Amino acid sequence: MDAAHLLDVAGAAEPSFFELASQRSMALVLGPALKYLVTVLASWRPRELGRLLGRIDEVILVVEYFLQRHYLREHAATLAENFYGLKRVSLSPNDGDLDLGNVDAVPSGLTARQRALSLFFTVMGPYLAKKAEAYHVALTRNRNHDNSAPAPENAPRLVQAFRRVFLKGYPVAQTAWNVASVAVHMLCLSGRLQSFTPDLWIAGLQLGRLDRTDYDVQTSARKQVLASRQQVRAAAGPLRALLLLATHYLRDAVRFALPISIFFLSFLQWWHASGHAAAANATPVVPSPLPSEPSPDGIAMVEDPTICPLCRDPRTNPAALAASGLLFCYPCVFKYVERHRRCPVTHLPATIDMLIRIHD
Image: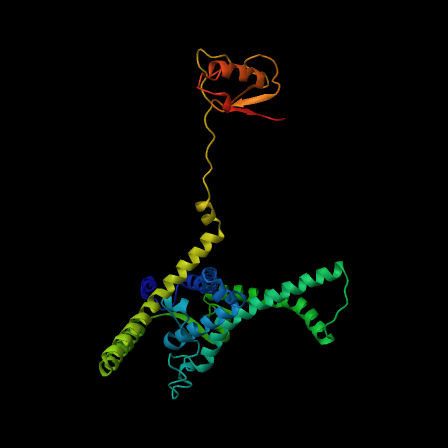
């Protein structure tokens, strides 16, 4: 997970545009990567896991909630932000001291309000946006169907009024949010605003790069965790100590392998969605064989492809000779092959079993 921290540019405190854009892209692929993983698992065990596909959005919501909640509490950053060596910093220098007396409320330097807003915009926001988009598509489809085939409305008036307001208001709200996002991006790049996204601005936060102090704090905390684990294992019995050791190693492995797994799952999803997998597994097309060379002692071919080389008349009742692939009149070639047991043009060995009748 610390590999992306090598992107530190000249020790600057402010992240580069590449880091901001990269962490944003990684955050957007987390949900699809989890969805692809659940889909693959459900295809292996459809009876046990098939029901998860019907609630895939809710499964992703729960997984992302606990995952992002852990990173916000421990690192003051989301998974993608921490991977790129970034952290969330309060815009107001006093915000970090609002609840310093409550250690449980501010374990990562963020206030409880800032963590709650960060968790909402990171996890709940995309989920609600996806559901709203699906609901709007369904309402639009039903409206178009009703216009072509009028049907009585059975829904209460309040529900009908909500649907009409949602149909008109959702595109406006979506456009307004997209415009605000672009405006905030431009203001941030021009140095007039410190927050890179509207949700960061609403939460009163900005993104900063992890500095030497942050790494020292993380290293110290890591040493304390390792020392605490060692004390717990020392006080436990041999079997319990072994189980604790395996659990600790598993947690560390998941911590470092999770970002790499997300990239790998995203690559697999792109590979299958782009058609490369189908192209790689498709049966190769066998090229057509080259035409056989005429024998110097054979019958000369004619330029007109409709003329039989044997009788020199237009072909009737055509037949192909499998040995050479050439076309003749069936009576002509049958007599020739039966007598000479070869192709009349190429002199390749042939039998009457190689004659293929062609029906016009």
